[in-house]
Image (tube, rainbow, N blue to C red):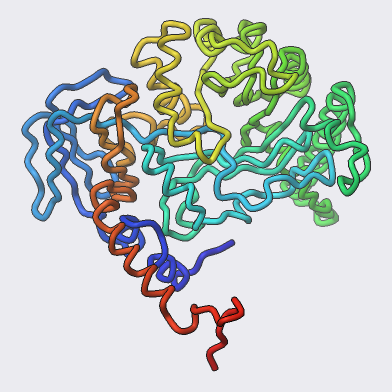
Length: 454
């Protein structure tokens, strides 16, 4: 879905209260946040500190900063400023996340089916979330290409794509791929290879053998062209294998769904065989069993804070999983995998201080800086540093507190959520809704049928 400018204007009339300002393009001027407790994540906690957001960037950090002419000044005394939260595993805004007909669907792209009007994007902003990694579903051993998105709710899908973010792809292991819960059910289709974890490994190896051959064909062709060989014939493009060649060349990040230690260890071994790395093992609820091996392979891990035993693959999950992996040197994050839980990632991070003894900074990194590293955008987001994108949120309490709420969320220096504005406009929205319901074309006839207006 590609939302046009006209559609964006129409959306402004029906979107949640408080969100219209971002659509109109206002609110992007300089903003000076005064006297806040700034949780930089990478450079400690700064008390009674100002943050200047200008030209889409964090322009200055310090005390008693001067406000530029025309700047919006926000008194943040007693409040906290945190980098925008990053969710490394989401399916938000995606219409139909699984192309489940084949076991290898590396040719399909999530960015082509983004729905920028999805209401959960606005709700995520209310939880301080600014960047998400939208992944293909887990019905395939090798699924589709991901989309890294900034939640500029009300803008077009093209404007929401994170510029310069490295491309990625979704892999999946285990029962979601074997689809055992679908076999024999009327209307669910026939069984599809593979139906075992052995078959999943074969699918991976076969796909990358074909990708290696495809890469050699193109390397040979380019070499012949470089030598001036006019008889060189360009190989036929293969949209399935092109993304896998990018994986082999280290140009595309692999995000791999799975739960059990044995299947993730298998994937790490296959990656080693073919000479590429896994960027993140997703969910990886048994990661504590192979934490050393994950760290040695240079893979990251993105898990849940406390979801376990909800299916057979999760029976061996423990609440200390994240802390154990982190202590073994694994780059660790917390993800939501949910359009609703995404709003509470700050609380999920806080749980890691209880289950594993993470420090405050370590816990905050699991929802900010570490996610930026895993997605290859740490030079832009994930911490409060001069020169980085102005993706920050103002909280009324410490973000790791259950009493904390977001007051304002900025992306590239623009306000995309403001709690006070939202509350103020709710009554206006209710009045608009009542007026629409009373309009002649929306009234129902005596028989309960909609009145037709000529």
